[in-house]
Image (cartoon, rainbow, N blue to C red; front, side, top):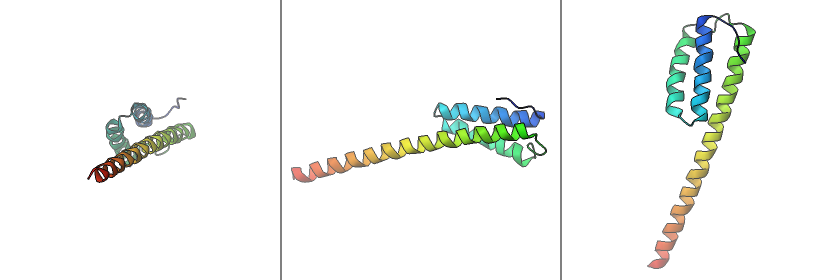
Length: 98
């Protein structure tokens, strides 16, 4: 999917594609850095007057980013829960040793 648009809109799309790639790689620091730049462009009006195709692509990519972030959040939650269960098991074991 590749929509036309102004150079600023193309930059928005490129940044969003790069954010999605970074998210797929698990590089959330890079996602945040790219999002800072994207937010700056949006604040400057880069999306103003954008064609429907450009807006549709941005929304599509944003939905994919949200899905990636949700999956990453769920993985961290699962890992944290497992870590806490392990810690409780160690604590129970050491209590029974006394």
